[in-house]
Image (cartoon, rainbow, N blue to C red; front, side, top):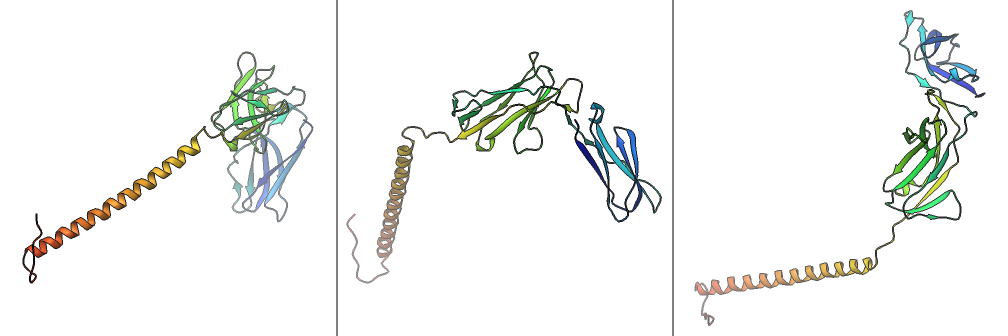
Length: 244
């Protein structure tokens, strides 16, 4: 509330006039500035009725006529009158990292984030660095919404907050609440895992060496039998036969 908002309608062809709509109601006719491909409409948010969908369209010069109405943009208004929600983070087997709002867990842990508010409104989970909420939940009868991050990875690390839309107000939002920070660490190697890996490698190398020796022995055996068979055919000069 109290912020100045600018809506910009981009016009792909020469136009005489641009129309801005609040929901389905025409809000403003505005003559487009010469040489510009866009027209702006600015206003200050003073009432909850400003939290609606906005559209625009233009009226062309040649040929004369109006364009189709644009896709909507939704204006979500944050009203500081509503108290921010509370938040907690409670994975299994977690350890505090020196503060009450930072939690460190191992990769693969299921993490639960709970947010609650007194208005039982639709609750949204936000992650710092993301422009839009990452999850949405309707709270239970106690006003608590539960969000679960399954098998977390380093990509899930970050700072989380919540907001809510009071019941009956689709585009009216509370302020963001306090934050919790999630840190994700690599899972420790199982005892003896390194030794087991070495043993497996040694076994594979030994197996390959044994297979190579067996193959060479088989090759020489076949070659020797071919030589004896050639001599038995009498194709050579003086020859002798091996004792069976």
